[in-house]
Amino acid sequence: MIDKTLFKYLVAGGVAFAADVFTFAVLRFFVLPLAAANPMARLIGALTAFIINRQWTFKRSSPMAWPREFTRYGLLWCFSTLCSTFALAFFIHTFPKGEEVFFKIMVESVIVAMNYVISRVWVFPPGKDHGEIPPKDFLGHK
Image (cartoon, rainbow, N blue to C red; front, side, top):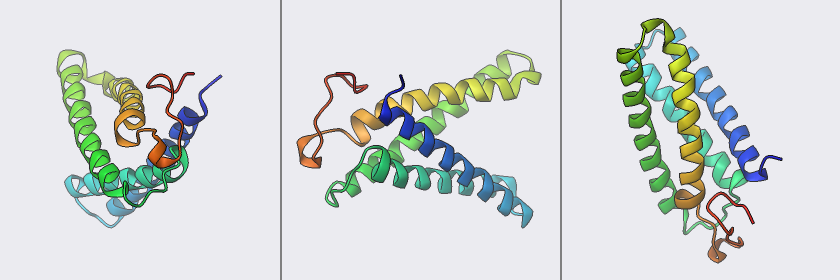
């Protein structure tokens, strides 16, 4: 059985992905250059994911923790974007170009798993100051 928090994280990711793709399509429809449209769309997706994950996935309500969580989420987003870009560049340059979509899916799957663990442990850590009972391990297993 899938952990409830992990399930919520994946649903939030799906909604954020849809926001990213929709924003990208609209910006490109209005002829915004790719170099501007993609970062703007990724930012909209990231903000969507942050809000849903904070409010629903990890059930955060403390206004005092918001700035710290937002900063950490931004740092994680930058780090994971760099990891994704470098990993894709490595695979695309090492293996045939016809496999770019496969590499993108493979790399992003690893990034999602990495981001879940880091989000759960560092961005939205459980603790009594947030009314949560800390899990016994970093994945939430009891």
